[in-house]
Image (cartoon, rainbow, N blue to C red; front, side):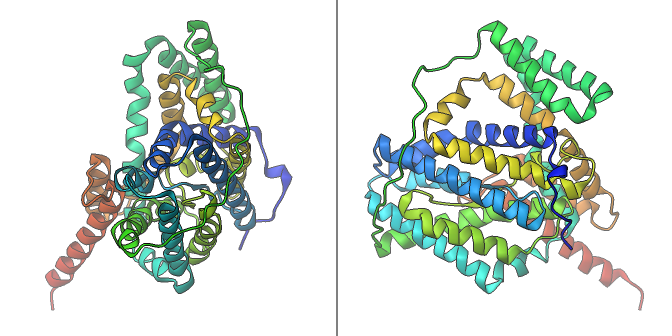
Length: 396
């Protein structure tokens, strides 16, 4: 049963979590979107329009789904899918690229309508999902402290501010840490604005063109990578955090959104994993049923980012990398700890969960599919083998 909607559940920590989620999302992968659009031969104006549409699409779906289901459901573009497009689209006309987007979105919508994806995700134990999430987020936790080498003064100041805030004002720890980071970076002169004004890039309609060779050679791999490396970890993240959401409905809504917006550059709208985890931690709200406002606030910031198209990426890129890495890692500490606890608390699933965690944390990529998928696959396979072995060892 959904908890009742109330504006009283909205809090400053939820607003900050939403902002940090969008900040991390744009700074970590906006450059890949530029590269993917460039690979398709899109002009600078068209690329800005694509980023505008992606921001608006993620904003609407994050706001709508989070408030409707009272669950921190954050959407994102498919970063692994965009990385595949960077290497696959050169030489492909823009209209053919849009045809690929429409084709892949239609397949995602089909997965939602038929329920095939939901049935597959139901067979993944929660300990395995939690282990995969911990493996994904481990790099962000490590990067937070590795940033001491990049900028010791900035990173140490933020870490110290975080520890003191967790001791005296725990609900505002991330906000205070971010403010300290911005102040130190400004004093060091490490915030560099390009001077280019923020502008609104109007998305332009591009009629899709369907070429069988492109659909088979690029469209199907793009669909597989998006489902395996983005949607599967996204759903597993919700499951690992203890949220039970209708998987088929989420696939249906995100697939339909990207299907309708693909001709305008909204090439993928998926369930987020890493940025969503920022909105699921105890810093957002002690009550898990009230954390949906974190993702809803992120949706609002995505709408703002969409209004300014590609220029918003330049705004976020003005901040030093050490600040981004540190605030992301510290914001995810609670989620990493909770995921590791859920992954290892069951004796029967502990070893399989550890395998899933290590594979995911390794960052291995096979056949163009990222480590999160292989972590889930390896963990489930290990659990099946261990379960069969234990049944065979039982006395008659």
